[in-house]
Length: 463
Ligand code: 4AD
Ligand code: MG
Image (cartoon, rainbow, N blue to C red; front, top):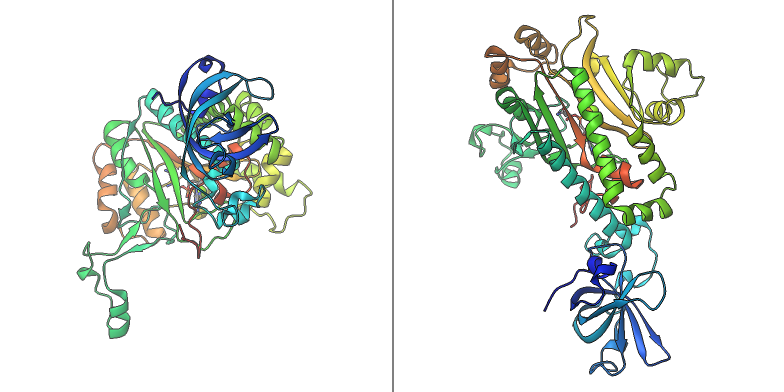
C-alpha cells in the first residue's frame, strides 16, 4: 500500500490518491449521522488529517468508537476534497487498524493544556504535542540550513572530538571523563593516579570544537564543525544547558570584519529558511507564544546588523539613564540586562559587539595594538542575548605564548596549537553559534529547555 504522510495528504494534489496514513489519534468525534471524525497526526506537519470513519467499517463499534487521544492507527482510504472546515482535504477510511490503545485515565496528554514546565517532566511524551512537534520541525530545518549554507559556501564539515584533554574556553567548567573506579578510590583514600586512567592523563567532554577546527582551517581553508558541546557551569537560567549543540565555522585568511559578515549572512539565512519552510509551525509560535516572532525575524532579515565596539557600548549604557542592577564600567562583563537594553531599547535588533577587554576573553583571541582589547565579537539578539561568540585568532607565536602565560596555561599542553603558529601561520577567524539559542530566538520560546529534545541541566538528566 502507498504510504502517505499527513503533510502530503493535507495538500490539494493528494486528492484522489489511495493509500495508508499511519500515526496517532488526536481527537475523535462521533456524528449523529452514523460516522466518526478522527484527527490523526504523524509528525510530518502541525496540522492533522481529518479521517471520516463510516459506521459500516467492520470494527466501528468494537474499536473505532473507542479511539481516544494517543491511540496509534493505520488507516487505509482515499483522499478527497474536504466537505467543509479548515483543511482542503480529508480521508475517507476503508479500513482502520488499531496498534496501541492509550488509557485516557492514565495518558498524561489526554488533558488538552499543560504548562511547558509540566511537559518537561514528560520529555518522552511531549514530542506528541503541537508545540514540541513544531519546535522539532524548526530545529530540523535550522540544522538542514546550517549544512546547506556552509556546503554551498564551500566549507568542509569536520568532525571534531567530543573527548578532549584541553580546555578551549579556559573557564574550567568541564565534565571529567574517567574509567577510574571512583567508589573504590574514595574508600581506599588513595590519591588519583591519572597515569592509570584510560587516556593516561585527565580527559574531559569538550566545551568547543574550535581548537581542533583551527587545525583544519589552517590546512584546508574553510571548515565548520557541528556537534554537541558540554559546560559544567552551575547555571540554572533560561538560556543555559549543560549539553548543547554548537556550529563553529573557522576560516583561514579571515579578519574580524570577514567573520562578522559571515555571521550576519549565516544568521539571516537560518531565519529566512525557517520563515519560508516552516510557515505553519512559525504561525503557531507567533499566535501562542510571542506575537512579535515573525515580524521580528522578517525585519532582521531585511536590515543590517548594528556593529559596535565594546567601548562605545559601555558609553551608551552609561549615558542611558537606565537603572541597572549591575553598574556599568569599562571592563565589566556585560550582563543580560545590558544586552537587552542595547538590542531591545537602543537598537531594536541584533548588535555585533566587538573589541572586548582582553581580561574578559580567552587566550586565543587576537590582541589589538591598544594593549587593552582583543578582536572578539559577540552577536547579541533581543530577548535571548548572546547567540554567537567568536573572534579573530592570535596568529603571532610570541604574542600567543605571552597571552597563555598571562592566563596560567602551560604551553606544553598546547604544543600542537602553537605549532600552527610556527609553521605557515595565517590570520584566521571563526565563531560559535549555539543551536538552541538560535532555535529559541527563531521560535520565541522563552526557555532553552523547551527547544532541545532532552535537556541536560544541573540535577536533571532523566530521559
Ligand atoms: O561564546 P562561546 O563560549 O564561544 C566558544 O565556545 C568559542 N570557542 C566559539 C568559537 O569561536 N568557535 O560559545 C559560543 C555560543 C554562545 O554564543 C551561545 O550561543 C552558545 O555557544 N552557548 C550556550 N548555549 C547553551 N547553553 C550554554 N551553556 C552555552 N554556552 C554557550
Ligand atoms: Mg561567549
